[in-house]
Amino acid sequence: MREQWGTRAGFILAAVGSAVGLGNIWRFPYVAYENGGGAFFIPYLFALLTAGIPLLIMEFTIGQKYRGSAPLSYARLNKKAEWIGWWQVAISFVIATYYAVIIAWAMSYSVFAINLSWGEDTGGFLFGEYLKLDVDPGQIGSLVPGVFIPLVLVWIVALGVLFAGVKKGIELANRIFIPTLVIMFLIIVIRAVTLEGAATGLDAFFKPDWSEILSPGVWVAAYGQIFFSLSIAFAIMITYSSYLPRKADVNNNAFIAGFSNSGFELLAGIGVFAVLGFMATQAGTTVGEVAAGGIGLAFVVFPQIINSLPGLNGLFGFLFFASLVFAGLSSLISIVETFVSALQDKFKISRTKAVLFGGGLSALISLLFATQGGLFLLDAADHFINSFGVALAGLVSVIAVSWFFKQLNPLQKHGNEVSDLRTGTWWKVCLGVITPIVLGYMAVQNIINSISENYEGYPTSFLLYSGWGVAVGAIIVGFILSLTKWKAGDLEVPSEDQEKGADFS
Image (tube, rainbow, N blue to C red; front, side, top):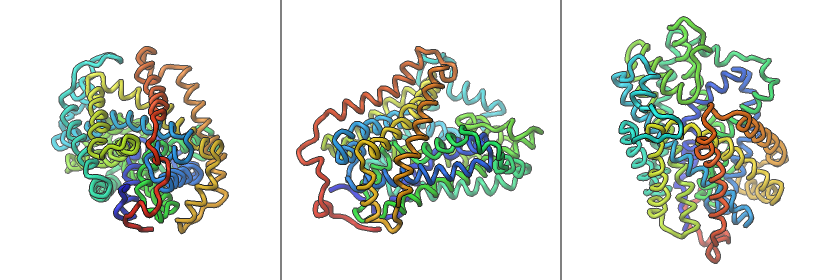
């Protein structure tokens, strides 16, 4: 019998926990600021309603209707689609290997924050003292103990949760992680908005630049942010929704998960820009001069801000980096669950064996990113697996489902039968027209940009295996795994009599 969530709240918390990750905190605020500030929220909301939530509904419905991991669900939808599920699982596998390392950094920094161990030169501390980055791109170097030890702890927690199963592991963990994360971040935001100069930062974040709203780049950025922040095309939402009871409401759940994720992104933007306003005021410069995104924001700029905070700055720093740890762990668990579930379905092995093999292999490979040259490998793999993995897999899956296999009507019928909120023509137009056009444009732009110049100026030889090789390898693995045969009866959706379990709506 397939495992099931204990309650509807448990599923929603898990879905939100997967969507709310590191990118919500360090990517969204900067993307919004760079693309018109307050004006960005119009294309962002439009993207949420025309791509984010429709895709969530599609993946929730596929998982719930076909009762399997991404490869099994796609195979039951159409035998020719199975490779898409394995491709998405391979993408999740790659992401898990380096995502765990970033959580390990945050774990270390939550300890460093207590005594402000990073000193005054936060950039020098991160790259020199902590990551010991004194090799060239392509060189591995030795393991960095300061990264290796917390990385082991990260995997112990993540795999420990997965060993416990869906209800007693993933659901229970997210019931702890998500409320804790929200409380910690609320404390951070409340403290941040009371700082001198906070209003300057918030003005920079919310002040609309209406001229930007006509720029195609801004709309692409909005769709990109929605797409990457909702855990779409990672195989996650299909896997999670496969543990839903048959009568569970998928449409409402998609709206709740989508808006909860966006609500946290907005909260993160307020907190981040309030403290950036404080930093700019202290330095006598503009917010634009101190604003940054990604790893630089979290591990270089924020420590600088924490250094200059008046009173209890160690506690503020601990809360910030601990919130990164909690956000990261909830996402990592969901990412690893995709290949654990896929291995169970395809090879008929126990959860324990699937976690040991899939999670264990991912943990071993993650050691590559805990070396002196790990940051370069991480940067290249992250860029290419997102640009030519996640985005491309999303495009292929939505085109396959809507155009080639013509499954939008059957999926919509199923979703509407079990949901209070019914979708109409808008849902099919979004998935059949709007989303393919936007994702297609993004894919073409990514290819043009990556061919015209090497990402971050890295050597071509390095990018061939750490970037292009990783992205293409995920597709090849997807095809190879789809060639293995299912056992008799596996592709038949189990009847209700075969699945006994709790039901909720």
